Image (cartoon, rainbow, N blue to C red; front, side, top):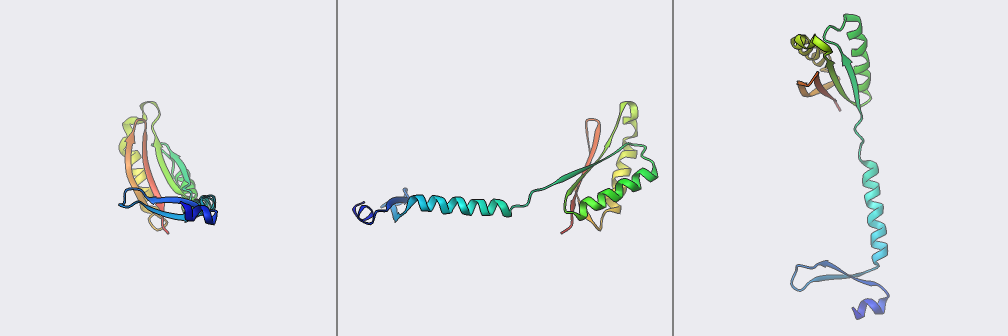
Length: 135
């Protein structure tokens, strides 16, 4: 502690559980500042995952399907994840198999742009499937 005081710096305990405890003489404010700077740099480098959604009906027409598929290709090529889902309204829930066929067809046609992260799964009135872009 005397050495730290003589140098005008702080005595920082590095490992309190060690015998004897490990300490280091340093400028603590400068250490905190550099640590914040490092954390900020790491945070800025982290990629933010964007999820785009595409909604289908169980009886989606061919033209509408192609149109939405074009959008899906655009989203995946931009690097966004895709959440494709079939929404069942009212009694259309009886067409669960049609919805699943539609999503599996979409996954097969988007194979070169992305890979299926989660196979079609029914959650309430929605059948959801996730597709992640290929690097």
